[in-house]
Image (cartoon, rainbow, N blue to C red; front, side, top):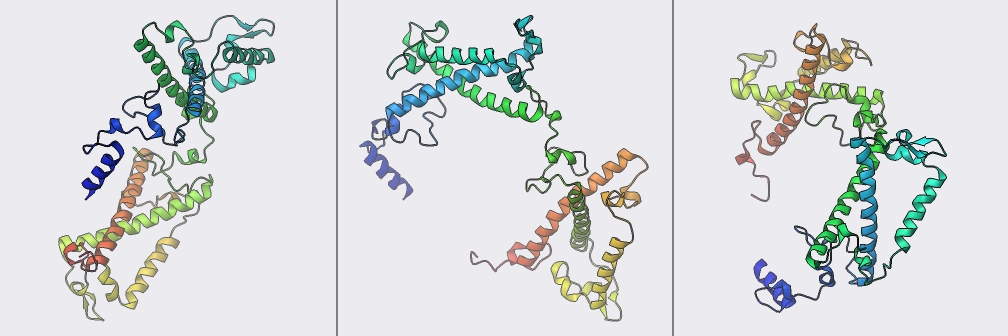
Length: 376
């Protein structure tokens, strides 16, 4: 059914049952398929649909704009890179102003050092480039050929190749210079030393526990975007507690499945044996009131038995338990970081176990028991 509909389309649009798309000339996009800048593997690429109107005039205007932006971007990109690699020119940029090349910072910082006469020269040069040659539609210059030896040739194929290469390099340079502007503006360094970027509130938490390779500091929901250390500490305490409860709960699911139930009575007064308690969510219905009271009391003890106020060791997860602390600061940091990682894994695991238990009726997740889905 898919195939025959596709064949109908290619037959109707190309006039050929076998779908020779070279015969399909009805699309306005076809008018630009032989233009410069149409390159493999993408071919003619216009995701925004600028050429959908089929106007050759609009296409030519945009192509001229692209060429000029590309050329300026190539010069600007080389202006960024060259001083970093080869160093500054010797001597004076402006003898009358006493301005040396060495005094000019690389990148965006140079803007503040350009004297008025320098801006005038820049504008004059731009005007000269615009007005010194006829660039009206249909001329060689409109297509990028100004007769420069490096970008032209007496061989038509070679010239086409050079002009196409210029467009490709210009596109790359436009991407590059915008990237350089961003890294320069955000780091204060033309070469983009991101260690200097301290403006982000996220940087405040890069040395905290839980920042682990290969992801690093990961906060896709932007919870720390406000830069509040108080909010971060509160969330970290919450994460630690959820992680610890989840590790206990995950082991509570797994252990009875592997080792079996404990012998004897869970509640002698209620005549309740460990063997009578189902594994997983089913156990909730078997917990007596006194059991819930013990759970709540234990939670309250954990909360109140130690000072967990901001700045304390307990607030960062260190309760002094031998397994999670050490007299060696590096070793303690490693243990506490491992606990957070294990807690995160356990939070994912227990939620998965809840789902498979709730949907299958089996704590170990026997999906053959899941008959509730209408897809079955």
